[in-house]
Image (tube, rainbow over all chains, first blue to last red; front, top):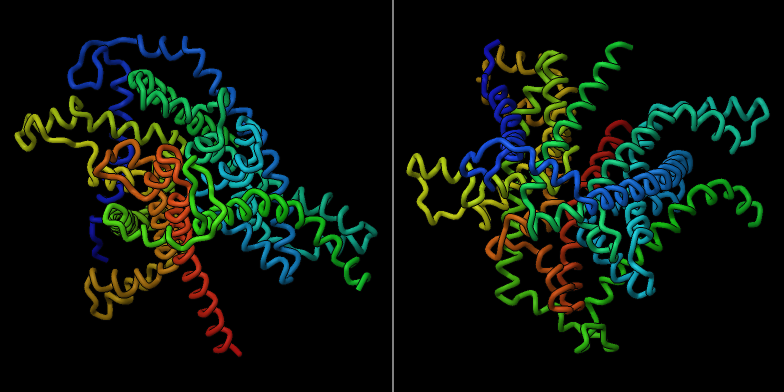
Length: 255
Length: 290
């Protein structure tokens, strides 16, 4: 069959399009002159600046605290929601399903503003705790969707068998269903972690003094000041991400 | 009655935690926004006691109108461009050999794991007045010293396509992977050209993927805030920026809430429409089988 080469060129163009800006920024992180209009000579100055910046490490620590705590909480809540939606087909579950779906389409800025107004009205002090509450709220839906996807191929007869053998429904769910769902729960948790650690908009609205996360700190650097340090940070992000990807690929191949 | 309630205890026990959490931290806060849209403001940036409908006509104000039109146009253009790139890309991915395909998919997904702000910032560096692209354009004589590459609606469009394109490629690829490509051969044996077999057999075959791609690009695009904030400037503002400005700078919560409520309905409408269409289709299918 005669095939057009056009789709292949599109994909290759797409990959170039995705990487060119990142590679330019990374190359620029070794550049002595700002903004890379000219090449001012090779330097590691920006990297040493980055590593000696204590605020950035503090922000990174905040990001990790939030990401781990909200991932763990949303894994529990998302899994219970998915099991409820899978198991029970009642009117109440239709409402439950709607509640789970709505946060997926709500723009971040609206989630952020509505939570801000809510916390202010209740006089809750803005800080790490409010960020945690906000992150769990948007992560639950993603975990629930991933686990629900995994439940599509789940054979409920297994639970019935366990119950015939004397297990109560809760025991059967806990000892049989949860272990079988584990890969789905882990995948949902991984997604939640990625979303949490990357979130800027919602965090921006519900954060308080001293609770800046890494994205918030990056934003303030973009706005007021040290672009060259962000170049260095981009370099680290790129190298780190690719190392993780290549390493995990190697490990999987060895298996 | 009590017995029926007892039977439902397991269901309630595992549904109530999420129901309670989402009611408190999602439904009520959203309702607050919609309620404030019908309230008067007070001079201190708070909410007045009276109810009013007068916040809504403000939307017809030419300043708002320009921003609303810009938001809709930019979101539609982003979606169209993402589809024009995403469909051929999904087709190519589905037809490549496994090794090439895995490699390409990985390359498309990896930028996702790099912080969102950093990806936007990268364009700010690339398009900076003293940056690489500007110097190149000066060199080949397309631009002059005063050409501005940043802070215009076109820049917002470029960066939106850049951020949303993987969201479009993945569902289209997932649909194309399930597509039976021998149908294309059949169409061509029956005399269809490459183009007409592509548009009349392949595109309808991956319809569901295309619908998903439209939803996951168009809806977040409508609510964009950070992209126009960083690369847009005053000429590239979108509804999201106006909402933030009304909340933090002008301290006019009723106005911010009116804009927010409008955005809420704008993003709900396409989702409701797609749910409704799917239900109707299932219903028709049910009738055919029954």
